Length: 181
Image 1 (tube, rainbow, N blue to C red):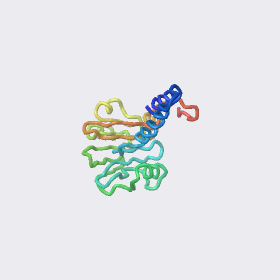
Image 2: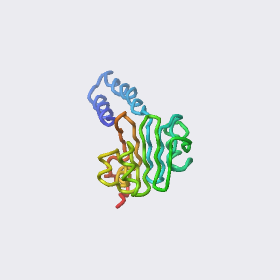
Image 3: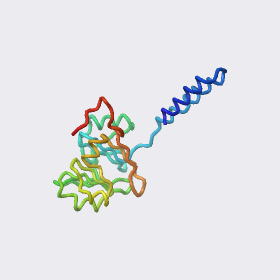
Image 4: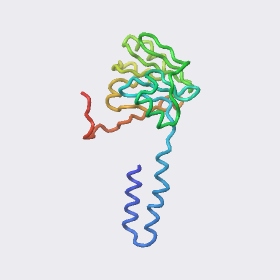
């Protein structure tokens, strides 16, 4: 979208010879800041550091991961809010963690494949560094090892009945990125 606006501005500036040509850059100067305004996420998932932050009653809280890690510091800077370890709403065992978010949805962080059977049916979002079984995707929204490898960090917004998902990397065809195999 930003490319289209920039191209339209350039065409406007190139084709008009009168004072009207200055209107294009003025419109772009007013429009471009609108792209910087973004809704804060309800869930943030790091692709490499095991960090998962979700919206709790007091803002973003870590279900897994370390406060102060690289990903968490970037999230704090980006969304201008501190992200600390969740003090309530998260229950962990040897198989993974279940988090109850302020928006009424539940998140399972699966560390062991034995947890898929129970967790997929009980939560709205399953996050795992493993490959999730196919049946799990029919019962919940799933972000697994393949999704994290392809899309990097994931931004999710709860819409009441499901999630809007934005991976950081939409197109892997970038010459500077080494694609994991």
